[in-house]
Amino acid sequence: MTQRLLALFGGFVILVLCCTGAGAFWLERQMTAPHALEDDLVTVEISEDSSLADAASLLMFYGLVDDPLLWRLRAFQRGIKGRVVAGRYQLSTGMSADMMIDRLITSPDSQIGPLKLKIIPGDTIWRVRERLTTLGVVDDILLFDKEASWLKHLAPGLPAKAKNAYTRLEGYLAPDTYFLDRESPRLQDAIQASYKQFQRRWKQVTKAHSATYKRLKTVFSLRDRDFITLASLVEKEVAYPPEAPMVAAVFYNRLKRGMKLQTDPTLVYGPDSWQAKPSPRYRRDKKNPYNTYAHKGLPPGPICSPGPQALAAVLNPSNTRALFFVAMRDGSGRHAFSETLEEHRANIQRFLK
Image (spheres, helix red, strand yellow):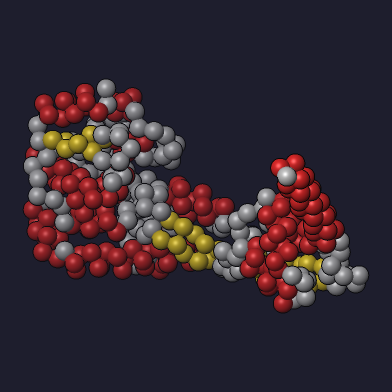
């Protein structure tokens, strides 16, 4: 009886394998054969975030696919996952399904929709310049930065370039996503849109913290430019967002005592060093006007584009007497804060050495 059951089970397994093999062979033939005998061109636009299943349903509407389910099975069989590349495609009715799948996961004949310029909190003007170049913007933002007449038109109210500052626009290009014309992306549009967004945010944050804004302005004799510069330092130092007000408070406490700010990100701010990592060797460079280890007070200007949290933090700092902070380097992005140099040195030994 047992031998008979084993024989039946073995026969069933063989039948399943044969059917599976036959099914795979049939699917292979279906997906590699031309969809139709005629060779007509069809233009199809695939939108952002479309999956292969979405694309198959759309192609069925255009008469290029008979059964979207087979597409999904074929994609699974070939190990193809994820989304297709958005854009405009010219497909032929004479193409096989495999050929169409390969086209949709590589690159379209042309892109659709506007270009996206992303400015991320902490980006320097040199990073923004890189992104603009990648998008095909011809004009150089660093050259444009020196055009006072153009900037007066595009960014009304933008402060004049401070003495020893590298750029005028740094700090005033608000982090966000901006849309540029795909056919002829213009630098002017990017500057105007990002500066207007900065103005909106600055107005919102000063209104939300009007009392402390006025008090800090009076106590420390700060201009708006100084607040933006301070916010850029906070942006560069903070990796754990809830700490932003604490970091801002430390900077205020040091300014109040006439201490140097000694913030590492200022050491490498410059056209030739902005991609470098801060290290002790940069601290001795007194020729760098941004070096807050060598010079007291704020640097000549912002060192990056601060985000909304950093802007809010400098207008609403924590109530603390801390004068020092050091990165814990435990993967959390947090810092250890201290009020005395002795505590600070102990934290350095604990977390850095």
